[in-house]
Length: 423
Ligand code: AMP
Ligand code: GLY
Image (cartoon, rainbow, N blue to C red; front, side, top):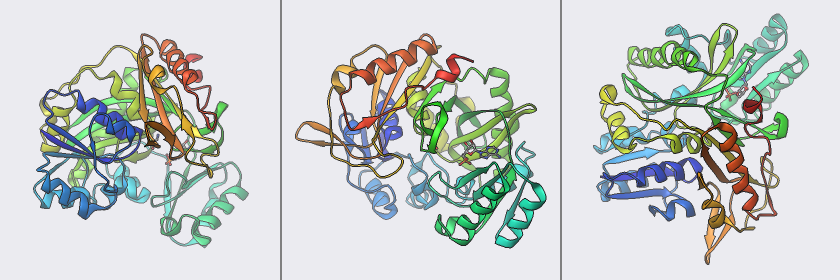
């Protein structure tokens, strides 16, 4: 089988790592990839949002399956373009990717499917939005409707903060067109989890549950990031919670998408709040999480490649996955300054030695290779994953590897998994 992965982050390195272990694989390409994927696949310098070039490359190389990592090519219609070319894609059509692309759309699907979610209203008139929050009071949550690089959500503790957020998003357009419409919703309280499923239009296969660490500094301080680390399984999500998430949220969403005539295929990522009354939907993403993908795939015992094919072919009903009965932890190492401005080009030492420690997988996220050296080339630069018999062992192993990596211009959170270990 000839496979093409699209993207260049830690998630795509982890996907390439898992797929490269498959005996069914003949050739693996990554567009554009990174130095980590270069070691196990062929990197091709086509950008993840250059749909026309990606499709042309897939046709030229007679690719059997394309796996887009990030949401941008999906929202831009790569699955639709590949379908026209007769090439399988493990990812949703542009219409189905609206589950991530538009928060209003997600809320409509949630209401159609009776999915538990925060009470909400959508506004494209700023004055009406300001009036609504006066009526509802604080705390209240303001969300830019469209894609805003994970920065479009404000959990406002006070009405002043809520008004400021509406002005910034709708009037000052800090997220551009993504803020033409806002969703304003009730503030939920509880622990958060991320539940992952692989979908084939009709069926959903559970892919694991993780807890992300979104804030940049220890103790959940500082601005939000793409994710500073993740653990699995989160102790606050025992099996009945997972069953509820699959039965009350993921499967009803798939059924509602079918009813709307836009079946969902690919990775579905449900961000959930575990409230007093059960899991409540915060958001859907139409892709695997990063660093959740690096955290969950090392726990998978089954060959992932035939499963991805089955998802793309609508054949998941007979698929079963086997998992290692272990825990997993990922620590993300970032360039100093992230999520603000940061420098690139600093050298990273000690990766090989760290990678030889027990249970460790080092996934490259934002690196570049130069004359045999690995240099930083992004904000999130490395994802250091470890598995272990217990979460404590996994976390200890991950930090032992982090401590062997010499990179004075980098930093990481030192408390990944701490809340779970004290739960
Ligand atoms: P999102 O970009 O939708 O994942 O939202 C970012 C973060 O905002 C979430 O991970 C939650 O921590 C928080 N958030 C979003 N919606 C709500 C809500 N209705 N109540 C409380 N917190 C929320
Ligand atoms: N780590 C969260 C995300 O991938 O969106």
